[in-house]
Amino acid sequence: MSTQLKAKSPFYPGQPVPVEFFVGRSEQINRILQRGVAQVANGKPVSIFIQGEYGIGKSSIAGFVQSVAELKQGLLGIYAPLGGVEGLSGLATSIVSATLRAGVYDPNRSEKIRNWLAKYVGQQELFGIKINLEKIKQDSVQLSTPHQMLEFLGETYNRLKDSGIKGIFLVLDEINGITSSPQFSHFIKGLVDQNALSQKPVPLLLMLCGVEEKRREMIQKHQPIDRIFDVIQIDSMNSDEMEEFFTRSFNSEKMTVTKEAMDLLTHFSAGFPKIMHLVGDCAYWLDTDGEIDKDDAFRAIFTAAEEVGKKYVDQQVYKALRSEDYKSILNKIAKMGPDIMSFNRSEISSGLTEREKKKVDNFFRKMKGLKVIRPGDSKGEYIFNMRMVRLYIWMQSTQNAYIKK
Ligand SMILES: Nc1ncnc2c1ncn2[C@@H]1O[C@H](COP(=O)(O)OP(=O)(O)O)[C@@H](O)[C@H]1O
Ligand SMILES: [Mg+2]
Image (cartoon, rainbow, N blue to C red; front, side, top):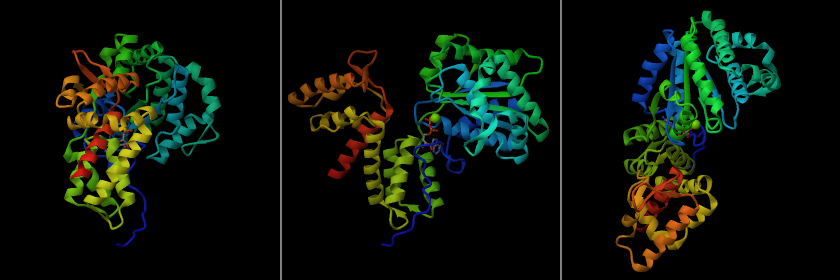
């Protein structure tokens, strides 16, 4: 066996996928392009909420359509991550910094932006652009009304019009920290309404990315939010999409995947993009001959399961889930398939010995205490709180079953 020198892993377990490795989601993409991007390019503002659970691919699809919109439809993509942002001035800071980073596909455009926002260009390097964050922060309070923000976005648009820009595509991502603030809901509604009512609306595609609960939380803070968004749901991938992903990623590094290995990789990834990247990355690094075979795939899954356990599962939960005592219970849960997020107590206890049944009670108590599961609506029903824990149980037990074979 020859040992290859590895160039660069085509897998990105911890970040949105680069455009060239993006797969699937064609239905959602078409909808965003037709009902969002094309409308805005024709002057009509649109607001979209990308909804889906943690790690399912919201940021990735937002990044993907932003780049298509910028390259093909002339919308200026502004990507503002709001992780850690709690108030409106933080929101304004993030949007202004993001605007300074925009327009990278065309030096003419990025130069125009830098001229327009010259007072915010500074010494500090942030994503390759020098930003005067302190200055932005000083001005952010002023910018945190819908009216001022619209003026800011409108002016950005005006200054770029003659370089072929037909509108602004603003993404607000990682909204977890800010949706609990009622001001945020009011700000968003105000932004959308004031723009719609203005004589010359800014052609603005406003896109928020978040889990469903966060959208509900926004509605709870301000009911009319319910009406402004076209909600686009992102779910797990099907096997064709997963196969395309693995084939394309490995092929880009001149590696191939055997049929058996492919079945294993897709089976364990269970349609979950985050797991696909983790498993793919493990396989990439441990392969030695340029062909991912059954053995490579299996070892990759083994390593990836450990990583999921260590990185995404709380330490106490991780310990509990590895206890010999709960093995048969966990196996039963795993057998229900990786997608099932709720189950019934009786499904788990049926066919178990008396001794094991006692453990089931103990197990449920412990898992509830650790917030892994919560009681559902019907009697005896339980629901998993976190997909990663669910997937970890699936990977662990299915793997053990394979080893026994
Ligand atoms: N369509 C896709 N094709 C390939 N990989 C994807 C796709 N969508 C997401 N991923 C990968 O899945 C993981 C989670 O994606 P991300 O966009 O960060 O999810 P979210 O924003 O919903 O938490 C990342 O590793 C990302 O690279
Ligand atoms: Mg994200």
